[in-house]
Image (cartoon, rainbow, N blue to C red; front, side):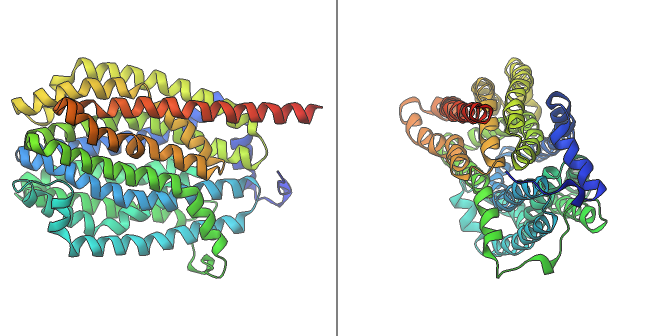
Length: 463
């Protein structure tokens, strides 16, 4: 693959290139992963804190968090479509020394996302109550979910666009700056939740207002990184050239796996809530709590994987596919060790963990049983995550999209529809285990076939 003359790069660009292409993998990936893991961990702590404080308002209020998760997943889906799509393209372009093209890619993704976020918010606010029922609200949950969701829609444009800013920063290797933006909003929300909910006696409205304000501030902090010249790529309306649709097409192709993954996660959450609805608000609340705890564990795998993505994209763009392979196996092993320790702890302390969020005997019973399935499922997640991220970062969009569709859609949704017919509530509780296990088993052959192809290409070069 052709690479631009290094002398044409600025000093900062050359330093970043040498860092991502020349630093040993065992040193580089942890360096990139730690800020990402920390930012995601604090973001997940915000999610857990949200569940904790809202849970104090009652079981129905606690269950409403699970309903609203589908809304957040939708905004995140379109944010990741343009964020991961632009980030992967920008990283490969910078690896080839194409800075102007990187500016166009980043700008196009950002301004398109502002428009899409606004449209999603408008539609959501106009259809609020019917939408909440569609997503699984019972009549007792509906007042809470509607009020909470209203504030999510009001700030949705900023949340959606933040995903683009964060991912462009991360793919440039600026994980520390991305961390600052995400962590600032999350920490602020942790303090605002109790202040608004209990201090100002706003109840569920306070939880929504705290989330909306923190997401807006996080967006402004991330945007300031670009405005203050902390990045290699730059944002400008003038860089959005609608006469060149290939820029948008490349972003959409690379971001499609993330869109599919997040939308199917939204559908999975919705079907989970609908499936749990016959068992009462306690079942929805329990699965919501377990889902938040599982997301906290999953954040470690995702964060380590996201530390690998710029290494893979830069390496592939620079013609160094040996770093793609070495980084993959390092990331997989590191992820398995970390998630294994956390999953065992979650299973051992399942009942106290659930009780911490909602002191309801039925919620604790259902949630602690399900936590064991979530814990076992965690061991299968690194294989699927690493494989998907590798194919997405090197531009193999079709394979990455297919693999993205497995965990939360092609496997999870049918399992949720079929298994409860035979196992009842146990089918709802264990669905995530079967889905993660099948996804890992499907992902492995794709990775092995790709690495065999690389080995053959290397042998051909030697001969």
